[in-house]
Image 1 (spheres, rainbow over the protein chains, first blue to last red):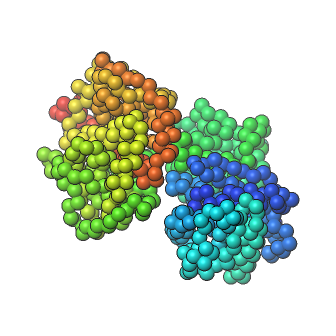
Image 2: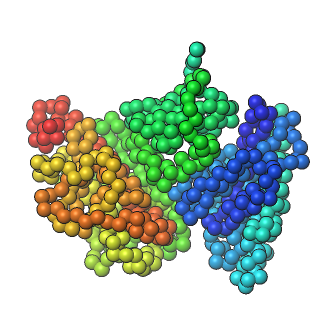
Image 3: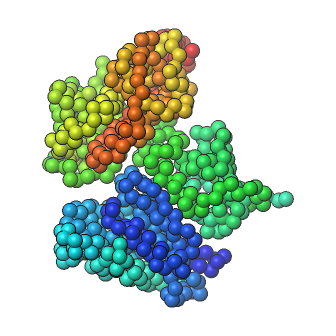
Length: 204
Length: 407
């Protein structure tokens, strides 16, 4: 649930990049931070967790309009995948408004993707949120590695694995080059704002 | 200047991370006071325009004090709106402090105050009717599960004293860990989802006798772990780490034995530490790890109800601070006593930590679960000790051990 900041007339909403370790969540955020520097307010906070980094920064999407006369400010987070970072993960997932699930296209990471998605569903359930109702976007990352002859899963296979039931928008991406990063975020923002709009209609 | 409390509540409901976020988004200025039943002093965080400017907690100040307060998961807080005339010592941003604080808490770098606050541990402090704590384990890595077995409520899974090498992980349900005593069976612990049944010792060539019985407390689904895979991993790790894991395992067995003794109201502590001064004093800031190369060492926790014996260490066992594990023992929560002939060598704990980092998730989980069991069993032992001392205080000191303990 987004936070209303009446003082600043802002609505803060939270978008979390979720996915197995080393799938490119951090690279995604770093690319966004670099590319949309003008829209980023404040510093990027980076916390080193074992084997991964947790990132956080504020992001002001432009041209998305206002809700009830309030500006929308988006907080972007990555979540530490490792099991032991329960407090951190809990904090990050608490009140999440939209999720980008970053899946690793490497064939060897197939199981990791599945486990991570299941883990996401369980974590959301702990907060009484439903993965089917959550604004969610899939990103099949590391597509560029095919050129280097590294075995990747086909997009069809990944769709079957991860998106058969969810049927959410899915994008191919290569976070290193930035390809697909923008569209995934934009789509997720759109879905998030739509769902927020809907929630506010309800509350009326 | 007028100042008054504008917000107060319980940390159980709203923890420090949430609280700082709430105060932050509102951009308030004032003083946040945190108190915990497990700390003598209060913690203070000065907040200017929503951001922490300075803090104090016991002897700590500044950012370290804020981090320490993340470990206070139980207690009260109140926020007083006030002008804060204090230099801004803390430069980190609010969110960075919160994320880093929680990370350190998860990494075990921040001490958690209060009764060991692992998942779902309910210890009855009234003493008389000690409820059995339940230990929940970490998330199961299904890739190590080779087979599933089901047991119905009441069914015996493992018999104390019998030999066996299986290691299970609980997929669903609760089991009782039971020690047989002359006064009847004693349920020491309950384990539930994610916890492990079985011991690392079964990877050794020597046969392994089960140290306690396990019975299904509800309908239980167990996952049989791929012991070949684990044994292979076990064989690959360095002999130092292997020794550490085995010693950890021994320690759990010992703590369990002592808890069982205490339940039977036997506290043979006298022989344990008589006339000795501790090598590591409880609460001491000792950050090294040692191995016993000769002689014996004793792990003892001091409580309000007397000394509680926890384990005897022999040649090859480790003691000291383990950088990656919290088992609720020395140096913070127990003392180490040494026999006269004790010789200990310094261990390279960094190396162990590195090696621990490289272990598979299941192996790490296993080690962590063992440490949790040690920590919780220790608390159980302390509860039993409390009963001894209370019984001793009420009646005449007919119980010799109880009177020794009150000294």
